[in-house]
Amino acid sequence: MNRVSPARLATSLFTTSFATRPTVAASAPGRVNLIGEHTDYNGGPVLPVALNRRTAIAARAAARWAFVSTTDDGVHHLDIEAPMRQAWTDYLVGVVRELRVLRAAPPGAEMAVASNLPIGAGLSSSAALTVAAAKALSLLAGKRLSPAALAEVAFRAEYHQVGVRCGRMDQTIAAHGQRGLAILFETAAGTLQPVPLPGRLWIMETGVSHRLTGGALNDRRRECEEALAFCREWRPGLGYLAQLTLDDLPEVERRLPPPLVPRVRHVVTETVRTRRAAQALAAADLATLGRLLVEGHESLQRDYESTVPEADLLVASALDHGAYGARLTGAGWGGAVVVLAPPDREARIVAEVGSDFHKRYRRMPATWNTRASRGVRRETIPG
Ligand code: GLA
Image 1 (cartoon, rainbow, N blue to C red):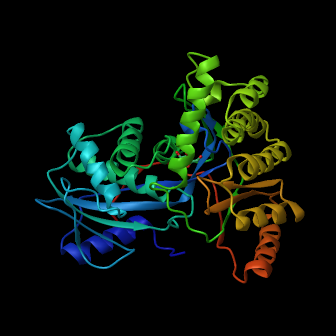
Image 2 (cartoon, helix red, strand yellow):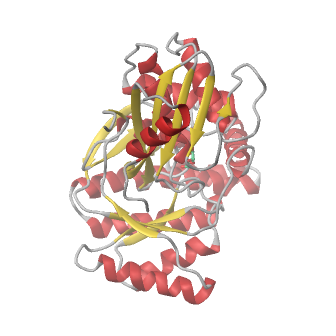
């Protein structure tokens, strides 16, 4: 990983590309979700953590919309009115459109984007981009939006403009993340409860990249909506799948078409696991937390069918070598595994897991650790 901070990189890229200095800079983190997968769009709880890796944007008001990024060459132009291009720049267009609704967009801007987050690794590089862009551009417009407002702009950009049927977890943690704390986000009630996370989490990337737009996430969401419609035939007024309890599962099995049953089972059992996990973390009971992570992974494997063999191998190997627990994090179908291990043995454990992975796939999984970090922030422009 490049050791230079994303804010510094974005600033120097801006200066060399536009031959002037940016007037604002902002950054937002990616996220690792400890547990609570595919519950956020079903009214359930999630327990995400803001990563120590971020995306930064340096910007200056201008008469046009232009941007540069460290991931490709040249100055690109954005047409905010034109149809989406099915490219990552759609996320920036989406943010501008949503800021305009709030009268919080500048007339135009030049922007430079830099990030040390892996892209397509299930670590919310898109939410880091949209939340950082919402912050930088609203500052240019002279508006100070709250973290909640920034998260909503970013969510609407992704959901309504880009068309990814995501929930609100990623944008919420990118905006509200706090150093040393995981956040229990009850998505139906909208409440955020900080839970201390003193140690480090390890991230092991499968190297299998996922594409969310129009893909498997949208399919699963459709299945959940169909399942909810079936459930409402016997439970009129049911708001979300996550309101069902374990006791409702036999009835779900009797009434729903067989392919939908495991999807509902995952949501209901994951909701229970996530609340227990938050309690275990609050009690510093890492052994229990680890067990819940593994049960969560097994549920993704068996019931939600969102894992890949590379992730299954990483999880099984982490357990073999003495981790408390591990699971696939984020949407899935690729992405990364989060490993929770005893602090005195964690480096050795992930090294052994890496070597098991190498034996099978002939490549090393990118492996790094993170502490819980801060959400979106304005950056002082480095000199
Ligand atoms: C993606 C979505 C989130 C959430 C996860 C699965 O990251 O953006 O809203 O649904 O998948 O838990």
